[in-house]
Image (cartoon, rainbow, N blue to C red; front, side, top):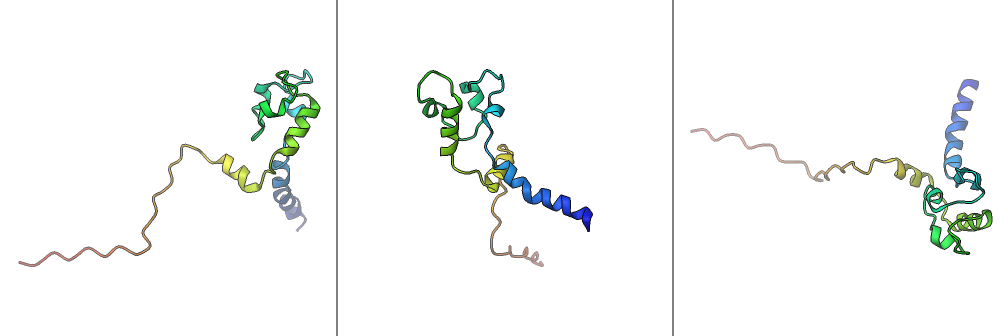
Length: 108
């Protein structure tokens, strides 16, 4: 029974961790203390131009925190949608009524 507790807790907690936006330090990949437009592109839904309130071409910690606070919360279904392959083609709808069986050939 104890062996099942940890995996179950991980499955329950995973969506909580997946829904958390990236921290400033995680987005600032070059470690210069500022977030460039290229670095900000890794944050889904972040409008860099709107977040860059002083129009200096970078985001400071305050600008980033304010912009992330304005983002809509990420739901589990959003994270699942992002994992789907965009190249997949949806299967055609199946008819709601069953097809009629083929007619028997006419006898001569």
